[in-house]
Image (cartoon, rainbow, N blue to C red):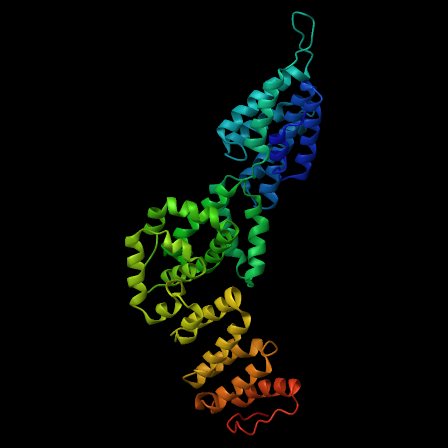
Length: 424
């Protein structure tokens, strides 16, 4: 009869080759062939250790793992018929702190001893081959599943450091947020052993993003923030519960004041206001006081208002990055059409020629083919009513883009009511 717990745990084995070998282990066990089970389980574990070392070398460029593999190959070359390399493999992994932790090393050593009894013709006093107990064999299966086969190649602390270095080097190549998220998910998050490991990443990133301010933190705050939000998106409810249980820790590790860290914290709470609600009361009061000292932060702090849409359209952020965030928030969380309306309003409020140039480039031109005819007419109206828009040097060039799109949608559109909307 199959063991549902083992069958479920088997699905967490990451390497397809290991999973195939483990199926053979289970076939032997369910058939009552316990000697064969032990022999095949041991072989599967040794193979999986090799696979994990290969992954550390090929994916993460791990020098220690490379040295272990080189040493093992040298032993095999010197004595091809000896199984000494198997023992050395386990020892070297333990000594180098790779793949095997101390409890796992002890369990593999125990399995190795049992495998010798099962694989060699050890005959007892009754002239019978050694036959292991079914419960003992099952215990070894559990130990190998939990300790090695279902685990990632790296310990979470080591992997986190590699993760930080890798995304810091990758951020310049993966400039589109979605591409970066897919990369992080495929290479790291999907290979972690459990939500516990991912929460460890989240908790560690929290300090790097919202508190610390050394050079590495400053240079990589953006990509680290993207990673943190991605993990919350994947496990929001679980993280929220743990956040509440450890709220004192999270409340201690934030920077409040005129700094990029605080600005990012406010943006995080805008998307996930429940986390703000779970902070200690004194920390919440301090955060609110910090926001109230800065007009731009007051515009950004959506998590504090009842009517988010009304607040966004009434707010006048001082920084263009804040306006970009509000537009993105509308697009991703409320309604893309409202985001376009906000873009038009923000463009229409341009207070200088330079502001008009930059706002057209960021808030209008990329969305020309998404605006409705009514929205395009509103852009024309904004230009016609604001000298900072119609008198700037780039006005005709930018206006012509709008003009051509309007004529494309409605060749009979009448521009006579907008004399300052000059084009062509």
